[in-house]
Length: 216
Image 1 (cartoon, rainbow, N blue to C red):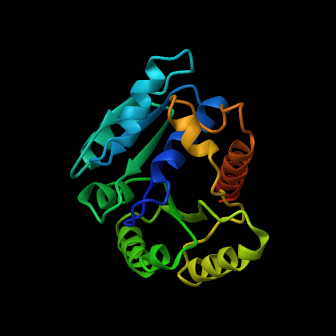
Image 2: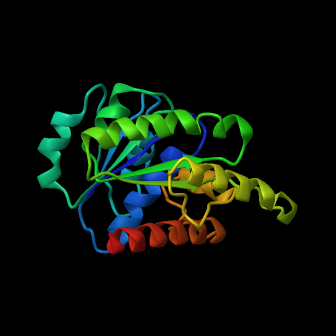
């Protein structure tokens, strides 16, 4: 199965989510997940390089740009799953990935400037679905505020995403230091023992995602 984590707005945690999804898949018995870094900033490629220098289970990573459909066709049968990290822009890599992938996960922070791009992403999704009818679309609230008084922001963001048929997941990730702390050493939050809260968020998100995919 091919997953693409994408959003034309930067800063929503796409790279961390893609990296963690690959680790999650490996932990669930998918022994051969591949990460594809399609972001010119190379965040995921650098994370994978740091991980390669550790004793952690290795996650292979390749870098691709432009139209990545042909490489995906070549790689699909060589790996148990593929997770694509797209950059924060409406790029040829993102559109070609969505045109071939099985699942698209769109992370959004519950902030006005981030949600402003949601209608545009909905249009991009519609274009992708016209080409790739098998594509399953989901969105996820990321870096949510931890104060209970800010819960209305999460509810409003989910309502908007639902209205655009972007199928927001019930579970969210919170704005916790564990995401940055784990990333610095090539870990994922699922493996970061110093603070388990971020890992619990990620596991809940991916467990829900997989349950929904099993239902389809």
